[in-house]
Amino acid sequence: MPFIWVAVALLVLIIMQRWIHAHLHGLSLLITGRPQWAVALYAIILFPGVLLHEVSHWLMATVLGVRTGSMSLIPRLKPDGSVQLGYVEYYKGKTLGPIRESLIGGAPLIAGTAVILLIGFRVFGVTNLAAAVQTGSIDNLTLALTDIFATNDILVWLYLLFAISNAMLPSPSDRRAWPAFLLIMAVLTAVLFLIGLDDEIMAGLAGPAATVFGYLGTGLSMAIGINILFMLLIAALEAVISRIRGVNVVYSNSKPPEGSKNMVV
Image 1 (cartoon, helix red, strand yellow):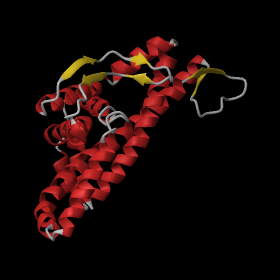
Image 2 (cartoon, one colour; image 1 turned 135 degrees about the vertical axis):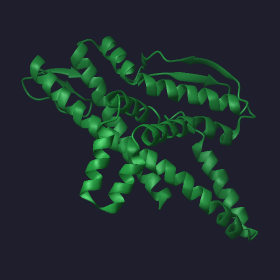
Image 3 (cartoon, one colour; image 1 turned 180 degrees about the vertical axis):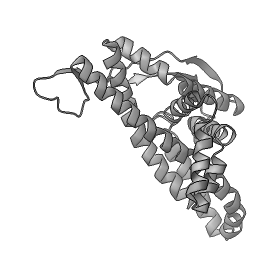
Image 4 (cartoon, one colour; image 1 turned 90 degrees about the vertical axis):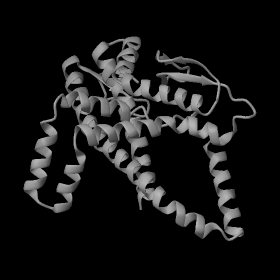
């Protein structure tokens, strides 16, 4: 069950992230009125998450003994119109292999989830909230929510959770080696099955795997909750500023309202 929820939560986060990145860029364009300034504002908002994303790539590559090159946190517009918020160069020699490359590519997800869990448990005390939900008591739930909203610097912590949640998912280039990695795991599983060691190995891994995916699912669930809150905020701000300025943001797959002034993202 933890594995299934992690798979579902990742799919939900991917859909959410696409919407958030598009509309956050659109909101930035509404606020600044200039494409280059909009990219800069969009990048500044997500900067804590982008910093963690790129540093985690660099750290994982260093730990695995992979030589790294330059790292950039300066956003730039790509020829296809998308925005690259940062990158880390590492050398893909013949000895790199799909396992190490997959670990480097997945490092932002691991680091981002770890930081989300750290903030959730240490700052917001989500353990108390989970316990209150399990009791089914409205009084306990109200008390737990009151404690969360009374957290010092709550807006700062919510912003950090939002920025990290929307920069921790591996990009397509980060996932390039994953098919080969999964193929290796499938072959290894088949070999264990053929020699009759699959039950013994799986029994030993079941407990640790359930724990790891349980924590990962908790972190992804928190990210989904934070994203829902900020999606509502972004949509509201976009509607208000569009009305004030008399300009609508038109996304690439949207049809612009007739007779309106439009900005295209």
